[in-house]
Length: 341
Ligand SMILES: *Cc1c(COP(=O)(O)O)cnc(C)c1O
Image (cartoon, rainbow, N blue to C red):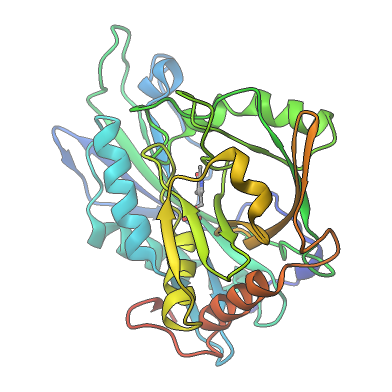
């Protein structure tokens, strides 16, 4: 065994099969013992709950190599907890936190040759997920479920520097008030595909979704939360019950306050006040922060002062600090770095 010979900086974001993944079944009212398997396929009854009524949830995190050569993950306890919240909303049996962390550890250890080296910018993306596996035809929660966790190497999110992107204010909505916007469920993504394809066809990188009830407030994009920087360097993030609580965003807010001494505020953010912000970024596991240079609302164009060439200065400081914490070059808050090997 030894590191895989991959062109780490050019593998992109695509699925590569690795040797091992973890599977556990929920049967007879309880989670059964889990196991590692080399089989990447799933065999299901044609009437399985996931196939008919979309009962599925997932998580996403990364394993990577730090400056001192350790293999670690970042705050996986929060992914485990968020998956429990998602399960409850979807009437699925929560997968216990300790077992989630154990599955994560087992799969990363078994696939350690796939963890990209320090400095490559590439990471091993980890995908835990759970779905209804038993047959359901009348609409109700299934009796049986499968929890799985696999890994796939992914290349650096930004090649040759983080270029600001352009968003459009979507004519479609992402998450209903009192709906499922705050959980990580495949169904939220299935219904966003049309909006994404439409935005791309119109030349935009991503959608900005508004609150569906009043279409007045900013929510998030299809897969990342917003951070705004005011002209006085205050960090603002939108408040809403239908935003997915990004672990990256929560970590950046902590970093802003405790490492950079910036004021942070979570509040409703109106679409018509976006023009007053100095910088804008999108936060998520994949990119940490993607800088936003421009937002187009039909005939109205907002150009942030940070421009279309580089990240804004405060966004960059946040980005450098959090990635430094993740990579082990800046001291991390207690419990943030979960060492696997
Ligand atoms: C996963 C996800 C995010 C980002 O969350 P992280 O925990 O930072 O990766 C943001 N919005 C949506 C809708 C998501 O599904």
